[in-house]
Length: 283
Image (tube, rainbow, N blue to C red; front, side, top):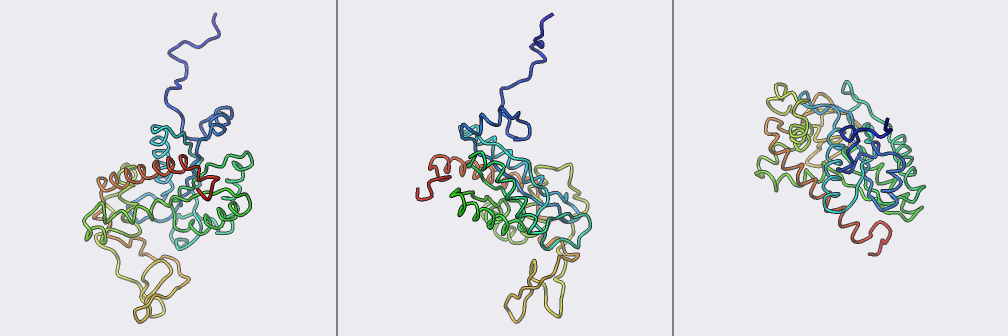
């Protein structure tokens, strides 16, 4: 009897794997040594409103995989590291079900993640960020890597980029009304990528009225207004988890946002690869 598996049962190798966790160590070593880019998706697990899944890391991971697939199709091998699902602690701790890392912990975890690749001289790394509370830790850790090792690690902040694209993709009036936590861009993206996880029946009919703290109207995450200027307040989010009009969000808008993010992400990988900006900081 032959020891070889029947052809029908042999594993298919036509489509390259994009998730680093699905590669064997031999496959990973070969592709990384050949210059594959590694995306490190970061997200959070927090209140996204009563209508959307708390794990917005799901979108960061899926979009990273789509970026990798697009980049591979354009001739630039790309892999996606396992997503870090817990974001840096910021304004959402008071909401039930959320799980977050202290900022000091996030810095240590992110540095360990990067060092696991850097120790083998795999330096083509991009952080794909899906949470505002991660931004400062990402900056601090990647700046330390640059100063210590001379390795430039860019950060591709999905929702900041997407927020800037809304006026381009939507009617400007709608873009202003739908933008906010629990609304665009995240809600529309989730409607597109994970419609089965959404609860459209729970979408708030309108954003809540601004709450007041110490006689000051809360104007944003950790901010309030006083005589026309913005004041910082060390407060967490209350019951007003939805700050935009989520009723204006749609899977169609999510598809537009996702396509632009994937296109930009793949183009960014191509740009850095072609200019060798990973190591040549003066290029």
